[in-house]
Length: 360
Image 1 (cartoon, rainbow, N blue to C red):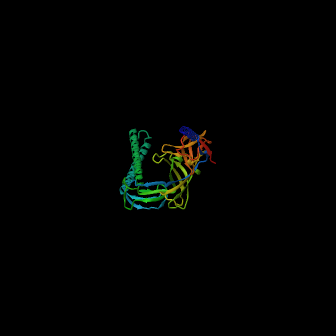
Image 2 (cartoon, rainbow, N blue to C red):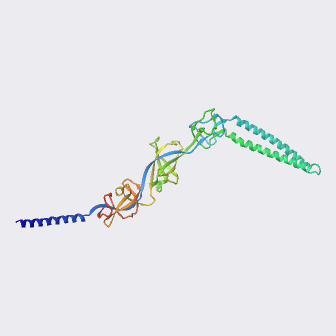
Image 3 (tube, one colour):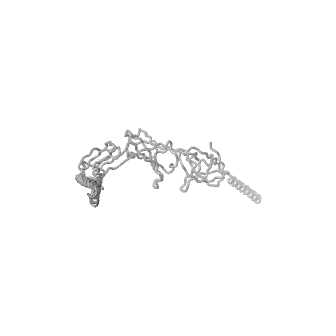
């Protein structure tokens, strides 16, 4: 009886072991199914909103070139002025006195020159009669006339030069614009190197819109070369701005390039110094490879997609471009027609056998 019981237990053990081996083999040959899609090209476009700043087309700080006291002020902040308009007058008595002195020297030098010239002309005429005027006397009179002529010319140059200093007493506008600052009063002493400027003048008929564009967009095309902006003071109004210049280099601190736009401002609605919200629409000049955002895995070390080739997974490093919400532009060792995993993750290791189910 015991012998038959042992035989039964032996066959039962063998049968269980065979079932376990079969189950293990089934687990080893089991292949997971993943959703994949065919990689295609598409037009990559992206609209972004960036902060910007409005700057005057021209901005100058007007300072005094001559020392003196402010005698008269013709403008104030908010005054609209034309090019060459008189803004203020400086009173400098020593400059006026010096100019009067130089003018008198001009008169004296001129009289001396005219007198010596007249004397030379008479002697020169008389010298045409032989033996009347000695040659040495004629030469001396000519030298005297030339010396007086040089002195007269030098006096005129000195007066002209100093007259320019006198012109500095009149503070004039270098271009048409609006006075935005005034730091003087009548009677103020001006002309010291470290003092505040007398006025600040801005030309705001056209404004510069300055925007720092992130590096990823700097090589793309801007739709129409135009931007749309709004300001905090006029949130219900939209303004157009035309791209006119680029910095040509990337700022190392914020990895962006400065772009400047021109904004017409004839009616003065916009104010220089205002912060703006700027909408820019970028696009690529050529079609790009575009994938669902879920197909890109981002880790601390890299970004990659999972390609399925011959039912085997493969990790491919990529660089991302425009993020278009549900889709993102990618660059790497990829080609249209590649099969990529729709929802990729780190757990799906490279070299794993899978069955790709295409997503439509």
